[in-house]
Image (cartoon, rainbow, N blue to C red):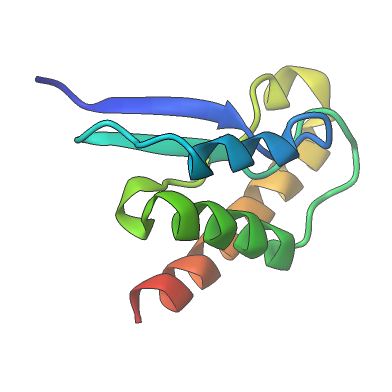
Length: 104
């Protein structure tokens, strides 16, 4: 059995609320979720604190060991490269903060 992960859009305002479905679903054993915590749908760069909030919300639902931070699909092809890199820095910084909060 290989690595199993589902990527979900969670940074896009049209889809962010959908993580609530996981409150009523059981994540399959060995499965992890990779929520997009920065969005391709806007040029606004998310604050690391917003990334933290999104990560912790999902971790509280499905378990912190089952969540890995990601970007919504199409980030590189939908926003200016400088904005994409800024979003990835926010993702990195927010994921680091979330990891400290969840694992310490």
